[in-house]
Image (cartoon, helix red, strand yellow):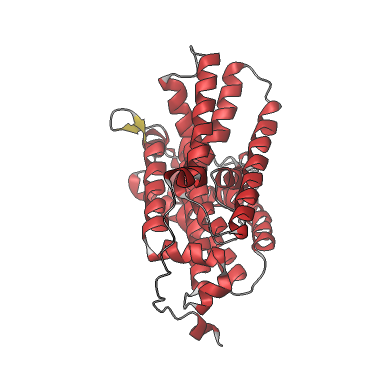
Length: 350
């Protein structure tokens, strides 16, 4: 069967309804609930340890700001992992997109100094960042879906290529002439009674991702492909086209995250995102999205992203040596994967 005929979308019959489960079965199977309880326990524990410093508005605000960029990355990663894929390049795509945005604003400014650039130049820089992220997302999608190269290999290659391209463009030196207007609004601005703009942007992206994944045909196809790409193809789902769109979306969100990062730090921070890809994957997996594909939720990703953030912030405030932070996050990550395997075995036995 040709690719064009296999990618034709048809209406498949609805599956037979599953037998209704008891409230206890639903509760026991709701991994998001248990992950949420872990987050609540962690927050309560650090609040008891340092009641003067941890449960404060300032700490909560900084925690939300520090997590906003990673959350945007993780929303795109959620879709990819649900399709049984992986993307190791998002951190480097973030860097590349930030460089494109910064350099675009710099090149369009008098004397190549974008410090006093207006909103027209900022808007063009924003489009440049989105385009830079979308480019790598499209490359990843085409190589994974069309060339049938394993996503691990494709995105590992994009990891190095995007970082190398960013260093070539900048000569290995961070760009620091970021418009004051951008920093004062997106970077440090607040709205709605003091909520940081960065947090609001991340919230909008999260809500849009939840709507797309949980209420639309696009989301249903994402789950179907992750459960079985071949079965989805036989059901008439355009698997190739859908995978390209998923990776394109993840790359575009990485571009948005790069622009947000640029606004907050006021520099391209080329050397500061080497672990962002692993942090995004960890947050998604901790939140209950299966590395085997076909299962996951945006709410789980939100909780999963905040668990490592709360651990790191709590350790710093409690005076725990920083060397314990990656150990604690790793333990939580391995426990999440172990729980996912147990859940899969239980499902397969039914």
